[in-house]
Length: 544
Image 1 (cartoon, rainbow, N blue to C red):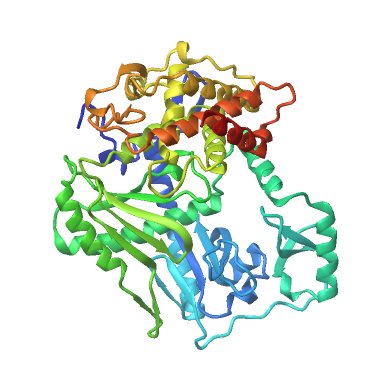
Image 2: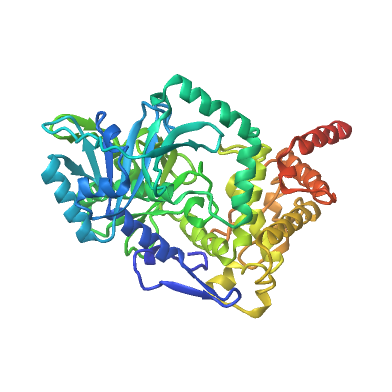
């Protein structure tokens, strides 16, 4: 296994629960334990999906009344979201409505589902319940008179999505409704008031994201995090039913390994899933993985019959990419149509799960590390340095790897060898515990720009396993703009696809950003303004 510890066989046991970081004096969960915990939550979650217009009545109920009506108060939490025809996670007035219901244990899940089925005659399949116009009609909202006040619900793009209804006596949320239900005159007054309050939408969004990043927070909401694991659970159930008929050997499990589980994800991050053989001693050969994926893709295209008449297809836009270095299936889930879902098999060429475990350690080592990488990813995406589509530019993962190399060189995080050996020494504790997180992030951003500007990408290579950054670039890779050794497949270059022109462009943006940070009046939002673009344009013209 290329001299590395293989994590994927142990991803399904609960023995490794905590690792203690002596350098930070606090506990954090391991990647293994986090995956097991979230998959367990997904198994006892129920998605209630609107088959007609029934949920428009339920949408006005608060969580407590909804829990009592549908599940006899057995649910632990309820997450609501809507999806419009374009796949937006926040749909408009005519969008489809969803409830994601979480139960505290398996028994409550079973009892809650049985109560829902017996009372409303609905069908539950693959953790999904569809509400349709059958024999029963959902109860209407109570007409009891109470004093209320209405507050607009403002989205991150500074538009009014819907209005929330609060009790005037205790400020308790009792419901919500869409913009189109307001009288035109009332709606106009709300919009005029909001126009006076808001600033530019782009500035507002940037300021909001910077505020979250500077506090070391995750950018993926917990609600979306749970939806992603539910999608993983649905796919795993489909795959297990298919593979169990083909072979009597070990079972396969789906393991998320993208930036959304490593801690460096954003709301538009893909859902990367790896099919791992449970208890297998060796990874799957690439040619066998293609056969497995081809069989599974046909299963994903099948429809499910609900209530003897409604046919539902969980996954759409299925693409088979089998000639890639790592064969994958790309698809979209009806729960989040805007989310890209990529499924691969744990082959000898796929080191995604191992790398995700190390990145999970990095993101949880201290809040400033997570904030640094998220801020730089947001900065690079804003200026068009990274793209989600493959090409000769930097990917989000490749940029993250460069930041990890910088952090290793500054002894802020452990190298992969030290991390695998669980060496936590006082020498790595260079950050002050009482230091402000935002100050640490800005110091690291400044240090990263300085690092990449001074680094000789054309003759040197980086090894994340040992932390060395001054290795000679292999003779066979002189044509590569930069070279970062894959720590789990040492014959591969992680940044092989980056061209000379894109590397030069990236370094040019780093130089301009570093100059801005050296100004006395610098603020973090300056990294996202046109001051960098204008000066970069002049810099490029001069050199031409």
